[in-house]
Length: 183
Length: 183
Image (cartoon, rainbow over all chains, first blue to last red; front, top):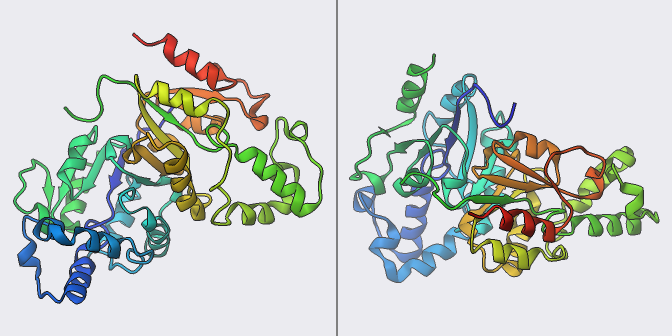
């Protein structure tokens, strides 16, 4: 049999879906530039949109080799993926090309926190139109739009006002979505 | 429009297709373990199959962070991909998960030698069943078998005796294959 089979495949984005990149980015930004921004200041926007003049500096700290190494796992993510992996094929699809220095840290983070996943199904990519899967869970609408099959928007501060037909607000809702459609 | 479009997409493997990993691996092996193996000794096999007791050592030198940084570009590869990129969407799909330390070197190698390619279309993966494309050019039959669409076997010493319906022996044949099927 060519390709993948009867078991449906879920591709999952890392940053702001599995890994709390938002909180570390905000904390680091506040510390380095002496701000006191909160999550509420970033609803519907991003740091680089609020502070375009600091784009280079923000990119620089994101590019530090270990930035992505110690992110917190998003609540209920690990348990849910573990459960879903009994019924679906799980692919981790992370847009790593904008921060190529992050490759090693992201790989090590996955191996540490999701040791039950098969690293043959890790995909470090750019545009997620290259990902072959039935579903993609992602916080970026532009990635969901370029993906060929069913997209699921995972709520993050920056996408809170975006309109998208399939939205989940947390991992319990991801669980409910995928367990309810199991045949 | 969802996904990719009317322009057909070619995914291309790196090692032994774009980059001459074979020659550097052989030279390094000979130097470190005092052998005088030639390409002829490796027809239809691989170093790790010939010397299973040295598998760990071979893996160790492949895992050195810069091993993949200075590979020679395979003959006629650059010019052919440049020409094909005018008619096809080009994806670079490299199996990087077995040597995670190679991520940075492979990325830098691509940016240096194929600066005209879009890094949003670089895919560092394991199993190539995750790659969404119309064609895959690869030297590994098992990757072609797991890929969902049309595979093209690129001749390498290890696959010389493998039977596969679509085989190309060099980049001139790749050019001919893809230019002849253009509508």
